[in-house]
Amino acid sequence: MKIALVHFRAGQTDGVSLEMEKWKRVLEGMGHDVFYIAGQLTQVDGIEIPSLSMDSQINFWIHRNAFEKPSVDEETFVKVFEEYVFQIERELQTKVPPVDLFIINNILSLGFNLPAAVAITEFAKRKKIKIIGHHHDFYWERERYSKAQNNFVIRVLDNYFPPKDGSILHITINSLAQKELLKKKGIDSRVVPNVFDFDQPIWQMDEYNKDFKVSLGIGEHDILILQATRIVQRKAIEVAMDFVEHFSNMTNKRVHFVVAGFFEQESQQYFQKLMKKAQQMPYKTHFAFEKVKSTRFVGDKKYYSLWDMYAVSDAVTYTSILEGWGNQLIEAVFAKRPLIVYEYPVYKSDIAPLGFDFISVGDNAYYDEVEGFYKVETNLLQKAAMRLSELLSCPEELSKTVEKNFKIGKKHLSLQSLQEHLQEILTQL
Image (cartoon, rainbow, N blue to C red; front, side, top):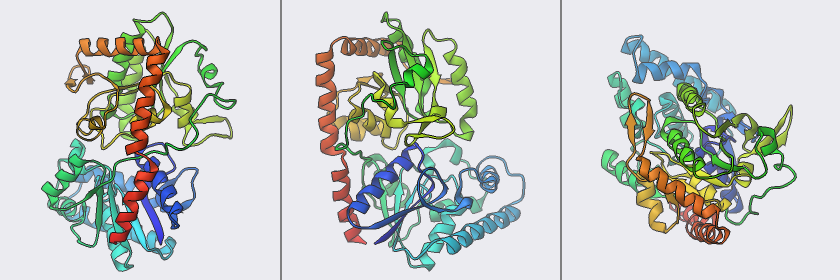
């Protein structure tokens, strides 16, 4: 089959882009011809549709009028909306070759670009292209999409997020989302969890990445704790920072907290708050996203891959309060690094039952309105910090723990398990 993986972007370090890369590898290994269709392509080949870009100013205008504060009446809004749908369809018509299947990632579920969902769905119908909706996140999970400003937006969300079409096969990435989709929309779906390539060479310090620490002023014997996620408020990076504060007070070594992910436009204020918080901490925080790309390369300056970040780290924090699954969690398992987690709902329902041995900071975070940050109980942070201190000071126990986690991950969350899912899914089409 000729298959297109469709998303707003491809080749970056966000979870959806990383997951598409895995699906592409597996589908190509099964003998299919696979390519990307995206609004922005970074270091990958494919078909670029600029009107699908996450930086589209037209979409920002539509988004504000759809969910925040209308600046025009509904009739004018609909006119702009339909013109944008036509623009996207025209680009698809011009650039997309004959294709058998669209695997559409988040465009039919998240609500970020309403016209894109309409345009791609209708284009696929006209061209008789089969659709798999791969839903990583749903609009009802995000507060920003909860206040539709007119009836037209409500109808679009009802009809296209996701479409109620028996010919479309729907994929959710966890059991909670599967149940919610059935409850809210009456749509059945299959759960395919996020996976990872557990058969690749283990990431290690090498000639390429050995200078990363030096570039940030991190000493050879200093401790590097990694936050590999994007800088988004639901990642609750401040909880990780509070944890590192407690840990740094328990060790005689210098501690560094490295944030490898980038920030979205809507997260600039959150990023500024984190930088201010970092200045008050007894350890050094490095926002290293300008040094990190999806793959290594040397251009105007040297860039490290996200995998290099794990190779140079001593431990990984993953304190998100809301996740569809948890890509960086699986990556830390593969990297054989101790992992500090907040027990978000999907972690508790789908991941914890697999039997991993992680360091928990609990499941009862609260939002501090004054500081504008999430917090967890101090005693839980102290307990978690003590546990990490024990593991790092006992190589034998550390090795036993991370090897156990690796074996569990390889058994349940490997590319082989994804291939088994995809073989069954494609048979249904």
